[in-house]
Length: 571
Image (cartoon, rainbow, N blue to C red; front, side, top):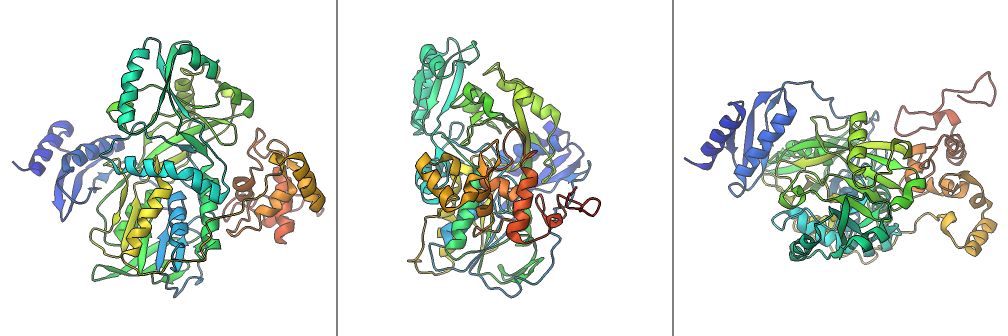
């Protein structure tokens, strides 16, 4: 009996014959039908395990899902010919942290680079909807691409963030254990030493000196000093801005709708803004990477979307931990589909709780459910009991792009020659992004000859954060431009000058949320309740548009309806 027959026998036993697998060229196809999405995912895991080592590709999910159907991909409401006829050397599809890092890395070479992002800004999906942790790699194994990209990426963060002037801190991660586990910590330390992850054993006294409010059930910990925190959307924006400064073109509100193929080659790519003719396509489309692969005739993997909800606490709770905290889960050591969430110290000083992990057929449903918030909070109270609902100032949900192999897909096309995939990017994708960008660039250069770009400048000047300047420098800045002395966002101490500067960057920014992501106006406890109207006024003035045209985010999200009673007051 061959491995496919054995796999079908196992699927029959486990799922009563609802699923079967067959080999198609160099990948495996799962077929059948069910209205239970969770069961479909479990069948996919079982089939992917069986296929390991037997095929070059991955598992493709062709099961008919008979439950409530997810909505189709949201598309921009723009249709024009802005890109018609363009012939870039490289078309990067997807403006998340990986896509933007790739675009920047490609500009180290004399290449015409076009990045297409379907949203009104970069980093609006997974790259903005995560915890911002730079992982040490605790739950990764050397057999996975994730391990190697995480290791390299982690080592690159100090340099990359320094070049781009993106705040980054090695906050460290504490993995906390119950009382009595101290002797075992030295064995665990050996395990992680073998993975080249440095750690320090903290006994009870040292642990409680660092985290006085830790739950008394916990009595020891391992400290992983290479863990860190970064602003994920801030880093993505910085990658995009530096790419533009070095010659790349970033086209927002641009969705890929189809491709023309000939002799295993992509000849053209159709978008809502015209047809382009790239030499090479880079697929960094997140949860839609399998759709791009299908358009390119290179569908050899599938994505099963995974929701995760995070809650952000008021800075008044920030004293509870100066570290990233996680309670011990033995599943970390034997393999799990989620890190299980934790208490994350963000780069801006808030504590973040989460995420959880919920399988879903929906790729763009970012709704935040009460059960998810409650479950995450309940779990993290086992680490710090003082956590409570009253400390939460906002929450958000992201959708991660997991493959059934639970690993990255970083490779040239299997069936189509001029496509390179950066797919299946879930955690630790943020950590791995700089390393992924280097390897994807090498794969592109194998197909397009290019000279080094001697004028490449890796340095990007960030928007001045006036509140963090020494008093003398801040006074000098205000003397030069009094707008930096006018505080519009009191929670985060953001000045009018910073908001105006955010609207004049290389990457277009013309919305309230766009300003929020760049300078944090509206990120504080009031969540823009006080500064939001003033931010809108600054946008209207700086962009010379009517106040009624100022948007919260994308098209159709205008903040105001119009003037009331014919006067100057708006609603």
